[in-house]
Length: 209
View 1: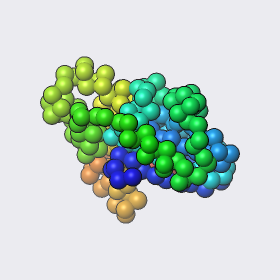
View 2: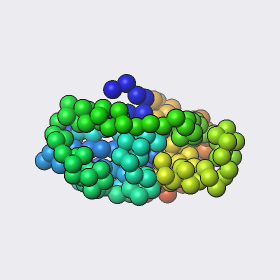
View 3: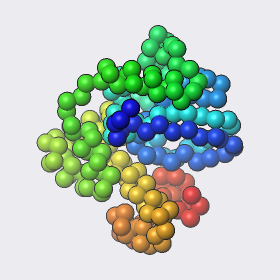
């Protein structure tokens, strides 16, 4: 499954955790074998999971194509996979990583997306490109870009940019950059700007994440 927009993952959950927004959509198999769809989060949400979870994260707007549903219908929601794709399409998906991988490969075979605007818009937002520039590069009006971004990412281009900017800052800090340097390189005006945006998106200061 070679696609830069598809990211398999697994996690051994052991209590409360904060799930940060990342502009992506996940298909997840829970410890009891049930499969769910976690839509794109506009803000962080609390999780109190226990056990081993396996999942596939779809980035760059691929998830809605795989599932056949607009992303903004799933924003901030976790719903049974069968409710999204139908019981027949979800049947046979086992509770392990191999079964999930095979299911996703089968779904990807049905995806046809010849318009590169969504991965281009996501990639541009991920490096801090202004919304007006993204619209120009994709050849879309501001209103059309807003509508299409909601359908593919779960929210508009401005919010997507904020979410991905915070992810950049956190990645830089994990790499070892001081908060002030991470803020500047990620595109914030200054460190207090990062702190305000982080609090708005996650409910916490950066130092508490």
